[in-house]
Image (cartoon, rainbow, N blue to C red; front, side, top):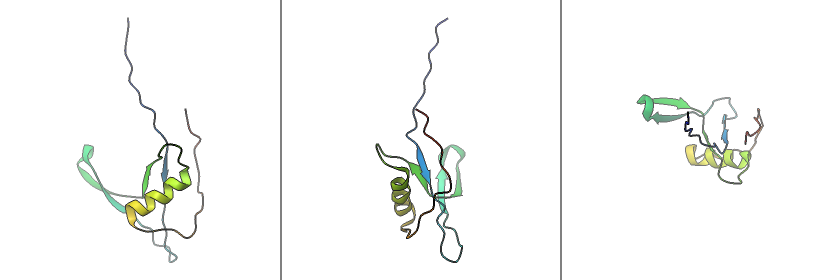
Length: 82
């Protein structure tokens, strides 16, 4: 029997937990069409080609919240699966 498989390669992503000095966290409202609901989420996005996770995080933070961070701390990472 012959079968066909479809798959896609995810380029990787970065997520940010942006915090103000007083401990408040920035969340954003995102409408997710498949669930037809709006959710509160941390800013995140896919890596552009040859983009580092840190640069992606910086770009997504500005794009999605309008804020820039003065300090960055790595909380964790997962190796890319190729």
